Length: 175
Ligand SMILES: [Zn+2]
Image (cartoon, rainbow, N blue to C red; front, side):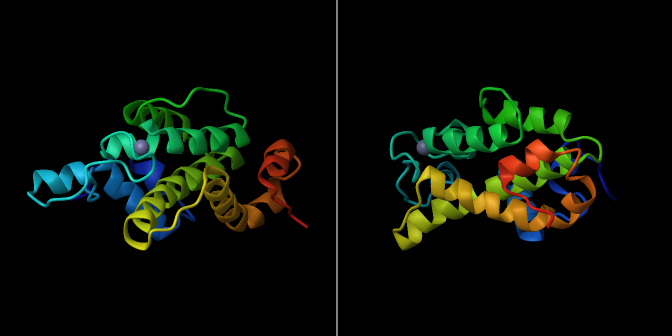
């Protein structure tokens, strides 16, 4: 039985990147092994956020409430011509649910970017935890831009005129 949930289209959409959508889906269900969940399970880990080393690590914190992730997501949304302040996890998910509708080029970019963002933030957290290396905000934004560029080039061929500003902002070239 398939239960159609409100956030379904934020994560699963045509041309989605499976590993990104999977992590985004796990994040929405709050099933990722964040420090708060591990501690609840009785696993002794450092409770501090690996991205800012200040606040406690929870799903809500690392994705949209941490200074590091807020800065990264703010840059991504501005690249999409979206002028708004980054909110809490709940606010960002609600915004995505209401905004990511239709089949426009911008909505496609937003969907790819949202899932790539969640994936890259989680990957960054894990690199810091397990490999001891870290990327700064500009670096992670560039990784997300590269993903969006690679995924959207073919679509941009059809709609680059209409979406010239967005293509310029993201460095998407149809030639
Ligand atoms: Zn943090």
